Image (cartoon, rainbow, N blue to C red):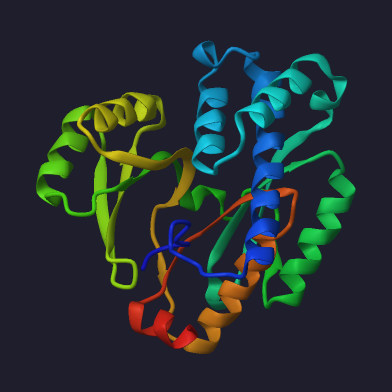
Length: 255
């Protein structure tokens, strides 16, 4: 299991699921504000907004909510108050951690993120300390359960993808493929995959580590996962990227 598996199945009680859904909607709405501010309210001419809308639909965000977010961002000065930047640091085991931030209060998020790092065996670093270890990529998560993996790979590669990996979930009995592309062809690859009859679960621009640090100690892995979970739980942290690789047998011990 490499990196942070955003598409691993996590079972929770309904109250926890509702709380998580609310956080996801809040983050998507914030990203839409930034996207509209940068490229306007028309998704056909705004690549980033189109990705946001696709992400919102994948998260089952109601169409009325999506429309209201775009309308609010188009006609409100509040949209311009959202700042976008990154924080960089290190987690347990020397793992590089890159946080994408969107906030209307830089001072608040700075103190909160620094606190999260310090409380979870990490260190917040200077700008640029780990960013060079990551590359900007397009990422698609596709359900290929019951499909021929080699055939799907050819569809993805012929459409312009750079790479494809797959993961089988024994509990759910599903197979999920992760397709990596250059950001500039993400939508074209997605369209080709959907036209070939596959279900795309999500698609986004992400930061992929160029190399990974293998974590083979259970205690170190637990500390690292605790840090990442705490960062992702913060409303101003849009995404967390880290260059770790935790073997399956270590993940099983973590539960």
